[in-house]
Each structure stands twice: as C-alpha cells, then as structure tokens.
Length: 434
Image 1 (cartoon, helix red, strand yellow):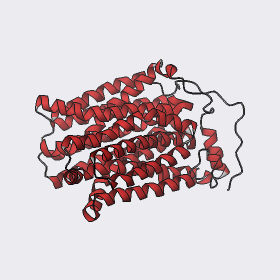
Image 2: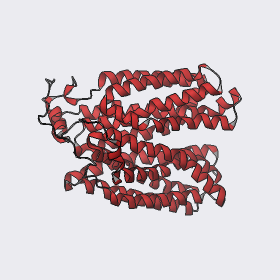
Image 3: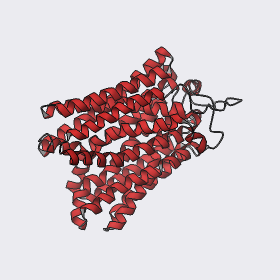
Image 4: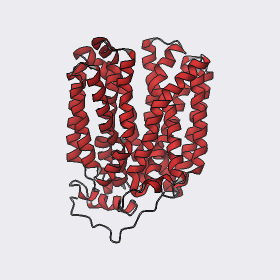
C-alpha cells in the first residue's frame, strides 16, 4: 500500500527532520567534548566551565513554549530554517573570542535558537503523517535525537585531535547551514503543496489527519486549568529525570562504581544509547500496529507507556544490585530501551492531546524535560553524596519511574484537551506531480 501511495513523507522525516535533530545534538555536545581543552586554554575555573555548559539548558528551557507557538502560527518551515541558520552562525562565532563572557553568551544564544528544533519537528510530523502512522514517525524522530550522543563524542574528539576545537565549531556550523538550506527547499508546511508529492499520497495524508486548524490563539488559563496538561508535563519530568542519568552520570558511574577503565567505559557507555535508538523505532511500529488492530488510541499509548516505565524501574533496580559491570550495563540497556518506548508514546500523545495546539503542547512538555535535565544530575549527585553509594542514584530513578507509571492512569490520549474547530470546507488539493 505504501508503495502505491508514495513515500515522500517517510523520506522527509528520515532525511530532513531527524537529521536536523541529530545535528542539534552534535552542536549542543560540542562544548562538552571540548570543555577540558577550552578550560585549560582560556584558564577558566571549573565553576566557569559549568556555567558555560549549563546556561544552554536554561535558555533552551525558556524558549520551549514560545518556539512551539511560533511553529504553530508561522509554520515549521520558516521557524526551523531561521533558527537553524541562527544557531549555525552562533556555532561559527563561538570560538572567535577567547573570553568567559563571550562563550557564556554564545551558549545562551545557542540554547535559545535550538529550542525551536523539537517543537517544529513535532508539528511537522503532525502535518505530514496520519494518526495511524504517528508513533512510527515519532520513533524515527527520536532515533535521530538519540543517534547524536552515539556519534558526537568520537566524531568531535577526532576533529579536535586533528584540527583543534575551533575548527570543530566551524565544521558543525557548516553542516547546520547546509541542512538548513536543504530543509527550506525540501520541506513544505502543507503536504499537498510539495512539488514532489503524488496526488495519492497527499490524499492519503489528508484523509488520516484530524480536521481542524489553528483558528484561535492559545488561551493559557484554559490550558493551566486542565489537569491533564499538568499531569502530562510532570510525567515527562520524571521520564527525563531517568534519562538525565545516561546523558550526564553514566560514564562516571561506570568508572567509579564499576571500576571500568577509560577505554572500557567508552565502549560500555555507548551500549545503552544503541539500545534506545533501536527501541524507539520498534516502539513506533508496535504502537501503530496496536492502533490499527484495536482502533483505540488508549490501547496504543497508555499500556505501552506504563510498561515502559515499569521496565525502566526494574532495569534501574536490577542494575543497582548487579554483581558485575557487564550485568549492570545489560540492565541499564533494558532500562534505557524502556525509556525509549515511553518517549515514543509521549510525543505521539502530545500531538493527540494538543490537537491544533500541538506546538504549545510540545513546548510545554519539553519545558518540563529541560527542567529535569537541570535538576536530575544535581539531585542524583546529592543522593550519592548523602549515602556514599551510586546505587542511591539508581534507586531514585526507579522511584521516578514508578511514579510515572501511575500518572499515565490519568491520561486519555483519545480525548484531546480541547476539541478542534472543524473546517466547514476541506481545503482542496493543489495540482501535484504523479
């Protein structure tokens, strides 16, 4: 069936939307990889370097909701093109001056510009994919996100070793600019207006999407009075709290708690990321298959998310009690793969619940995630400091997963927060190539 109706939508997510997210993670991680060299070269203190690294996440968090709203009102094509050019220019400018204030400002601008990437991608998927394919498309987007940490460290280290950290930022800037241009020329906000789409595929997409468009401004008090709006944000905070262990403390845990060498740690620390890349794609296929067979968004979202949280908790608990490093890593792979299953259901549900306000819903969700990225590493560090054991950090994550499981009982993906206003007349498809 897909061959008969065309595959342009899949090519767009695989070669434009997901790669844009991968490049975003490469740019974001570049300073982390270069940090030891930059700190030594510029004579910065550890506190200075930590501020340079973390200010990105504050700016990224503050930009989430405005960026999501802009993606809804202006369209992902313009928003992501403008912001990708902006963050690429910031990347190129970062090494031009060797001072703490300059680097701090560039990192803040980078976070603000990149805050538009995820919400724009989510809104684009909602416009290009019918509901029956929503989870699979979100799985591909998440695979692009999780691919970044796998390649960022070795690729960035290789470039720094051969050409220096300044060249690293220039290379990533050039990649971002090229991808931004490819996005502008290869993507359209309305599928039926794309010059390469077939009439059959345009009609297939239109028939499977919810009717309605953004006809009114988001009324914030209306959102804030909706209990599920808060529940959804809190459960994502708990999910990213778990994920932040992998993005920050996993290498340290493997070396200090499990006694691995630097070389062995590099290999072992990459395995959970490989597991989650595979998991998000599998989760997307599974969720869409459940939806096609049951015709129920509830069955396609809630049980999968709850199972993911439960397995995530069990994996963390088992890793804490494992007697060997390979055993702990195996359980951590299971736990992170389970997180991937929840991530797919989260971003599919954000589009289901948000409806015509999917951009706002995505920005709100990512705001909670950004907050967890800031709070999670600190909370885990305090737990380890108070107990003297890294198992406390894993136990904290297991508790977060258990709480997240319960919160999904209060979510109804089959009931949008605010029903969309139906259009009186469906827009006619423009003439397309076959």
